[in-house]
Length: 629
Image (cartoon, rainbow, N blue to C red; front, side):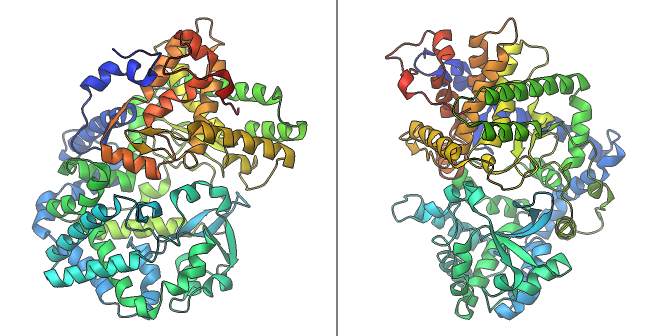
């Protein structure tokens, strides 16, 4: 029997860890995935009944149900075999030069093809109430640039898996073995040009640094082989005056990547990327084959069953419609009111902490409180289902692929049409059935979908102490993001704007670095944690736990044991070794076991509740404890 004094995570979750099973088509089991899968099973059962006519579906679900019918028509999809893939690739194989590619680029992007150009319209960091045109970098084959390091043991096995998968897909699509091998080798040659140029995941996470405005003619000057100005203007449908680059490093070298000499290997890269993408929309055999590389990365044993994959595709296109159905079925007004009360209490706790802060100057405190008081609170679901999903039409007389391309183009066009217009602050980034929550720095809002407002995170009928240790800590975690190393750079209106005095920013940075040091040298099952990558989430966990603990004390029956027990419960997780390696490489969140165990070591109340003493595994000396908010 594991003692709490030695390992909170293992002791509280001991019985669950012994019995929990990872579903073969999943890389992990956890409080999050268990709840997500229970929601999915419920929604999928109703979806199937609606599709078969066994239950009458609400009118607003028509597009979702129709797309599910197309996606779940495996008899047709299997009979078509690789035909949709072959048809899709024709648009790429017909290209003979970067000149051809330049002319086709905008339409390929709009139709959902992988083109290496990751662009879009998003709120402007510097003027958060306006939409700007954003230009990102190409995505490498492996999930992060760090995977390409010579000493990374995963590099060659993973590239070998990707090569085998892509070769098989190409041969199924009609290429000979020699042709397929040539395409794969060329694609890897082009891919090898990218890792030293693109941002690592750690660099991406310091996103307040990744804002580089360029006049459109300066952006266009980066390349002569591709007409970037025409590309951007065609996408938006009107002249664009400037773009924002996430990184200058890549674009400073782009002329050496998109060269006429590299056309043939770039074309192979396009074919290789898109054969996998469109295979996932073809037969079940091709769908399974196209997921081989992903399963190697995550350790999932098998592909999702056909009906589950069809549901996932429908949700991808029309998840906001299903979210409306979910919240009406499962989320009560009473629960929403109760959660809103908890959120307001967390805001009050933060206001009190900022007011009585002993290391910030008065000017910075005033501005921090102003930001706090401007945080918009979104609970459960959007006030209105986005109308565009109701207005679109799924054509049951055409193929899944044709519908996918039409819908992809409509969604892309909707986003692009917003360029240079006022930001819609009512928009949600997650559907109501999502088991997650988020802080959006550019709308200065905290968002809690109905999906996560259930046990073990929240239960309307259980004690307040448990709810504070669950959803309370999650709520305060999201509030804390407004003041993490990224969020703290944005003002109360959501714009990137330094509202700190130099002295206070130095103190803030020093405290953040103390958190980095406290997480240094940690690993899970041999996979090392990168404390710089996980810094913002570690700050939010620490601040969230601290604020929720203070809020919990307002309840007359508050129990520290119940609070910390629930905290450990919401982070329960079993995962494949491959998935742990992937998460520690690219995920800004620390592994769940460490999220359960590390933050609590900074609170005397935790030591008092479980009688933890010097020499116990969970003990941390007062001098080594860290705090920020």
